[in-house]
Length: 111
Image (cartoon, rainbow, N blue to C red; front, side):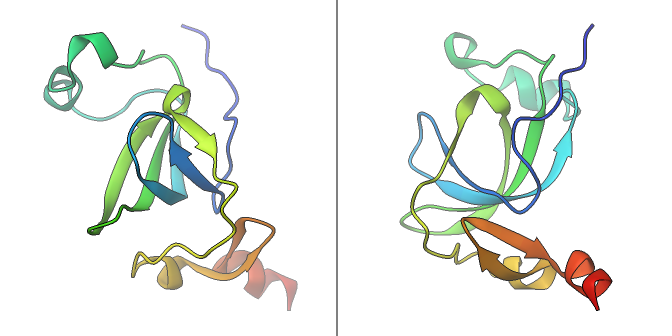
């Protein structure tokens, strides 16, 4: 199995290609690393390949905020420059610049 480089980066705001939610990437797995049960629960006709990066998101939709685990093939850059309202965003990130959050660790390294 070939491991591809991740297309998106931590702090970037993305949206789902099919479902109406957006979020901030806070972690990346080079290949699928969730449970087999979780993967099998996805309807087969939309089930993503396992041999691609998967992203952990602080996600939001019209009703709520939550944590999402999404394959690279199902993500797009979110052109909406508004902040993501998930309450954990402020725990991990500080500023929002050009559609990308700056991690608190990176900000501390600058000082």
